Length: 114
Picture (spheres, rainbow, N blue to C red):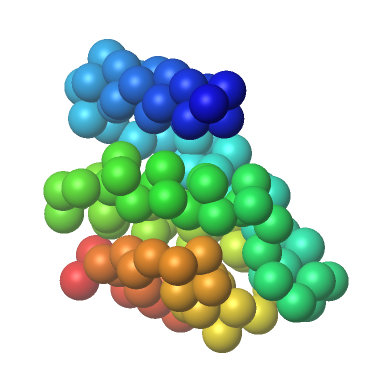
């Protein structure tokens, strides 16, 4: 029961943030969502941590418009450029590993403006 309540409160807080921010997305927010994923994306672990998947799901819920998807894509691409050992296949497989899909693909070579 406590876990359900915590999840519900976290979801409501995220919705509030989404609407208070005027449907904008910053790279800081995106980086916070994907930072727990670095050990998976660099091959350090075989599967993403629960906090990583929570960040992926949050990003999916926030990036709902074409503009926000482009922003998220560019932020992830920018963050990925700081890690030479990130695997592009791990980045693109991350949503499915977390049990979801996102409607934009990301790798170092992705053109986020298409």
